[in-house]
Image 1: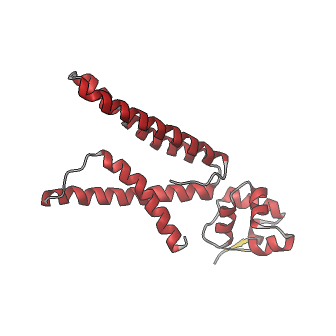
Image 2: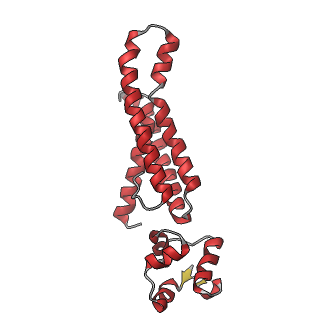
Image 3: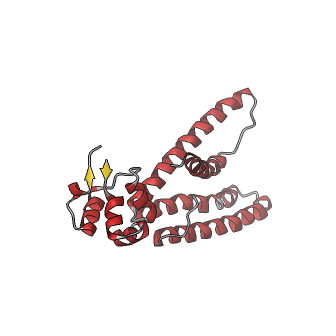
Length: 132
Length: 63
């Protein structure tokens, strides 16, 4: 979701997402650096989960934005964008999952989160193209 | 829902940004309401009516 800095809620959203993405890069590097150095399952699970945390935080940040956004039209637009994006992502994930039976490579589940964020961009671009 | 926002703005020589500032919403919101792409909630409709000093039904009407 790309926002122009127009109001306080959007500015806070952009700042929080920026921090979460910065943390993601750091924690991904930590995971890659240390996960091969331990055979202890509990530590491996903990390390593997680290990069997921800031991505999960992004969903909370979006929910927080919707709570803080006082402009009802902008809020409705974002909710609609999320719903359309969710539909696109779930549809694509379902189709991909079944096509794996026919030989498509298996994708890790975290691709669904990435696909969802991309779908928000697709919806925004589609709206722009259609003038809506 | 039809509305007379554009006419009412023009009568007062207000831009969309002027009206948005008075309503404390984004300019996109004013544009979306004015062009009929978005129907405002009742609380926002009351705020719009208040800004123009009119009743809601003097601004908004059914298609």
